[in-house]
Length: 170
Image (tube, rainbow, N blue to C red; front, side, top):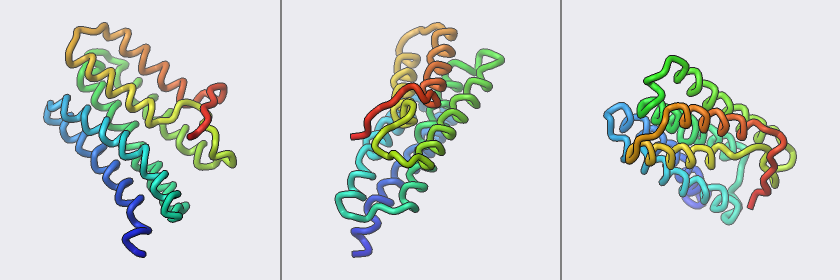
């Protein structure tokens, strides 16, 4: 019973660990491995809540833990990755990083306080983080204009906090 009740939390910790590994790999200039860590964290995050509900082990603790892991894996790690790859070249790059991370934190906090857990208000941070990982692959493999990257990151930030965007949770 104890193992069954902790499976979803172990998956969430794995998500968090992959986000931390992405940061460490970014520090070491291993951008592709950092990107793959974020993508794998996305896959794990897709299933941890489903596993908790299937095993009837959902809890407020698990929801909060999941949000903290998501902030690291899909907020901090992809923002730092994009900054290290290209935004480091512009003075306001760090401001974009802070805005993106703050938008993700705001979006997660709003969802946790929401009564309607069946609808996402704003783009979920997991999706935004996955888009950032895909963007990093493009940056790694092709020359891309820094202004395009900055605009893309600003748009993702806005989409996370927008109350006009509503996505039905499946």
